[in-house]
Length: 300
Image 1 (cartoon, rainbow, N blue to C red):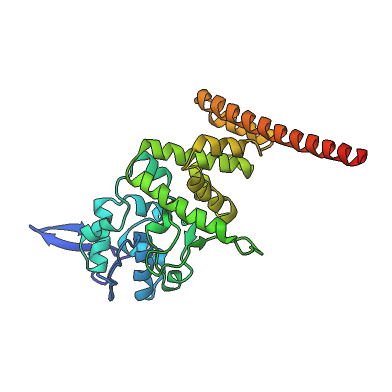
Image 2: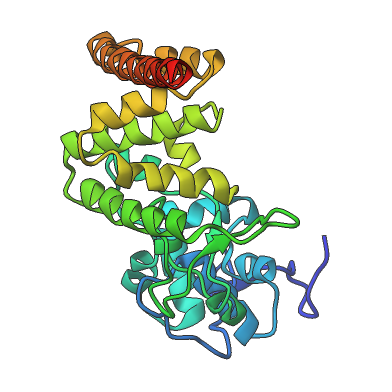
C-alpha cells in the first residue's frame, strides 16, 4: 500500500481522535465555477454545462462527486439524497435545487409518454448545451425557449421538407395530447391513443403507441400526432375511414391491439362497410348513368 510522506496510508485522511488514529474520506471540494439553471432545465443538461464551465468532461465531473457514470441516464428520473448533496456541494448550490432539475413522480400515462433518452432537440438551444425536460415529452413540438420546431436527434439522411398541412395537424395534435395527459382525462387519452393506433396501422408500424409518439422517424411521429387532431371529431367515423384504406397485415395488427375492445372493432367495421357500400353504390350509379347516356346518344 502506498504511503504518504508521514508514513500513513495515502488516499484517505488520518485524524487523531482520543488518542486513536481513524480513517476519513477526503472532503469534497467545490468546483471553481458554477452555473445558474434555467427554467425547466434537465439535470443531465445542467451537469454538462457545469462540466464545460469548469473545463472538464461530463464523466470526470460525475467521478469528482462520486456518481457512477453508468447511472448518468437515470439521474434525470430519480436522484438519491446523498448524490444530490454531493453535487450541491461541488456546484455550491442547494440539494433542493438539484432535485428540482429531475422529473417528479409521474403517473403511468405521463411516464410512458416521457422519453428515457433524448429523441428530439432544439437546433438553436443545443448549441448552448441546453437540455429541457419538455423536450423529453411525447407531445413536445416547439422549443419553449426560442420557439423553434424540435428536430429528431437521429435525422434521416436526405430527409425532405415536410408538408405544411401535416405539420399544422401535428402541432394541433401535440396540444390536444398534452391537455389530455395533464388533465388526466381517461376518455381523451383513450381517444388520442386510438387515433395513434390507427395511424400506425396506416404506416404499417407495429409496437406501442407511446413508442411511436417518441419515434426518431419524423414521418411516423408527426403522422401519429396529426391523427390525434383528426380523430377528435366523430372518432369512430375517422377510424373507419382509416380502416378502409389499410391492408390485411395492418388489420391484423389492429385486431391484436383491440382484442379486449371487440365492441369498438365491430362498430368500426360496421361503419367501414357502410362507407364501402356507399362508394360501390355511387360508382354503380355513375356507371349506369354513363351507360344510359351512351344509349340515348346512340339512338339519336
